[in-house]
Length: 512
Image (tube, rainbow, N blue to C red; front, top):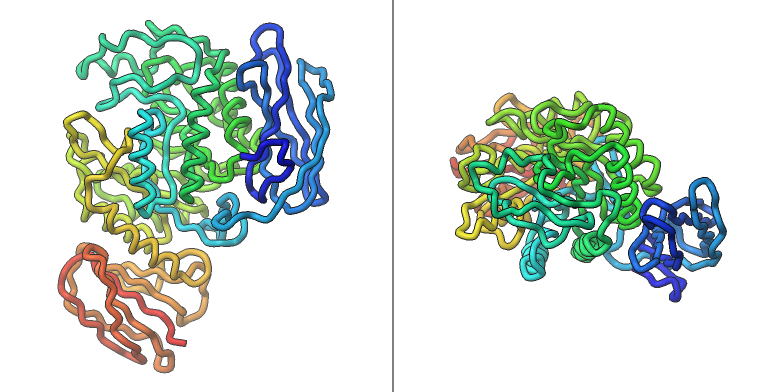
């Protein structure tokens, strides 16, 4: 974040401007500020927010290098009072800063500067609301992992293994006495506000400052922050606020977080379990994002049972929780064809051993789902739910990882980065007993690149034929043992010997 006195900010960085302005009544509702930022290539209006201590702030993410002008006004109802004018210089992006992630090539993603982005995501719902020590432990785990996207919440979570209180709350007030909760009765409190005393028109800026600190820590690691703005797992009353309270919350969140380049918006986790919300409500939240996020960050909404209508124009990509106990990655082809958008399988069950069917698949099966989804042109997501003596589960709290699948994602990420162009697509020319990916929109009869995956099947060899003239380099990949073996160059019809074990892949690339 850049201080205004510096008068410079890097491209896709964040400029923050502050003004002192006392308010009569509630400073979150009685007035606000906004600013207009302009350069020859763009003009952007950004909403401000109250940050406590009679201080209002506004943030801006510039997209072009050079000189910018800005004007700040104080909004009081329909009246606007000029407060400040100034300028700053946008300098080139620093190393590793590629800008926000955008949809690219219909089904895929790339950073604003054109660098392909292949999501290898994980879920840690309330890692940001843990102790400082656990947060640092989580960040260190992420630093050593292949993950470049993480899903997490603004609101605290109330569910199995999550019956404690968070480090802070988004609103001023006090919660119910959590000592009355037991594993047997906790579901009765979901979405209920009895016993809570929160002022839902008065935010706690320190709660949001802390989340911003977490977002920027992720940004430093090159990780996208897929922010879950609403969810049903609640005993504090945050999931059943009025429409006016929801709108105040949404506008505050959008004003505070939109200028961070690594933000994605997930309207909800399991939207269909939020019984007090209607389709009209969800469409209203989407309109707020489209109106008050001037940077057009990626937008999605996540299901429990029925999918939202991902055809909706405001939805940039499909955020999918599997609906079938077995089939997950196998449905990517159908989802791509149906929605014509990137398919992100944000919940394909979790590696672990808890009692719930969504939280006890093996590391081998998680890894298989990742490779199968990738070879069908989709993007799978990870989670981990191993029993823990202190109920510290990665899926919610972060900390350290105990499973095996996460160790295998470095290899998949590296293989995805070798894709010619941007993104893989399922190859319609493959045989019935294999999954094969080719570069997206490569319409040539003989492709430049093929990635075959044999899942739980165990062939001892496979024969290949593309044409008589093209030479291909062949590599055999053991996706579980994490080995890549170069088999040489072949032409015409050729055979590749395989070890007769599951989770093998064959990469075939045109020899230049």
